[in-house]
Length: 251
Length: 336
Image 1 (cartoon, each protein chain N blue to C red):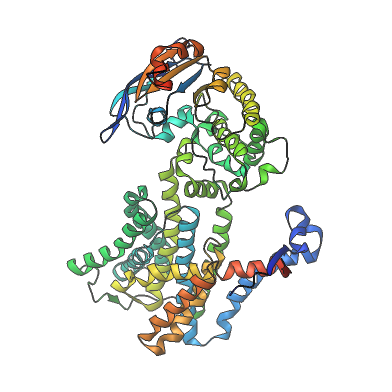
Image 2: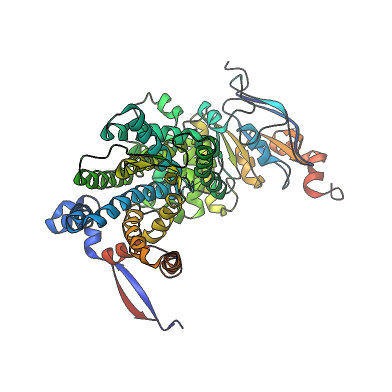
């Protein structure tokens, strides 16, 4: 069990009408990995995340998580197995205060099971998690309405929502986008700490420089297909990748 | 038109700030400040029947039924994101189950009502389950269809008394039981649901309204939570229906009338969407109003519409939000 891949995706394909969003993509994820997924806009990265986490059903291919076939399973079942994701567009539960946002995952069957039903005061647990992921600088922020928080906090809240689930894999869909350089710099140690806690990360990103500081391995996608996979800096030397990013002439 | 040189400034009253959290216990004034609006509602509702004559007591009973429907509508619309126009279906299922049990098995009204409340709620929830995957206007349309559907089935098959209905059902023991049963249920339901929306289950429901995708990614089965919410709302409606059939001692297809689906929306708009207490107040204001306007015959609907449009245009926040603001804040004009 320990040696086998935690998450194994094989020949995943999905077409929306005439658009082949994802075509025959395969990858495997070992426990403790940080895998980056990069590619130009519209190359199928988010669709890949949607297919893996059950939000969109694949046309072909299989997704196996912990040796269990989860292809086409509903998202909440997949999340309860320990595979969850953040969303590219930040939409918190805007009418609730920040810490109340975490009450939702804390009520999932998975958390109830892993904590043995003895959660105690969920509010206190929620506040603890928020402090862990970077809400500690201002004691009032967790009590603010989530809809009024700035983007940096929303990204952390989104990560906190996943983290509260006590997951094994988090797929982060462009968690750096829209953040300033200093915000990203403070986010990187946080992601490293989450990884140290035993969470395997998949990061879909456009910010390559920051991603390469974290990722052990990257997959490059273009037009729905995987065009390269490997160690970050080596992959960027790949002629196919250069072509995808810079165009034929410059490559 | 609008005087641009000055604007309204709103500030929280100091007592409002003092009553937040544990500080509320600091003195009687603070506690009174918190208790007063709640006590006013409860005492007001409970003493109202004593001041009214027979006719208006009946109107009050009907208002109570609409209040329950409005409460259910507000819960589903503002806390779960399901705009449910199936109020008449809840009323009809509760009313028919209770009436039929009473007519065919001879069980007393006080015994039939709880059974029908539960039975009607289970039945309407089961019927609505397939529609739960729809959102917004799509759910509204489907839920609006069910009461008509039930109506035509009853007419076409001539079951349950067909178009005639069934009369001479058992009634409640006396007029005071009738009135206080519905008023007490309204008050309990209001405070129970206000508490519910701040419990964990309520937070999950509000999460579903704000972003159902994130709730799914948090490992929560949103359909099962939506079912629970619809069940709670239909409990209220089915109780109203069961009570109604014994109030008039009669059941018929008018239990599936459109009024039961539409008036709660008007009551919610008037009272203030999402405040829970607002829709209840709205129902207690609108039902007597529509009774008072009965003398105008068909013109009543026109006047009624003008009142509604007036609210939507001039006070879209609704009555309760307006009163709440006046209670908690003071306003002053400042020059810009």
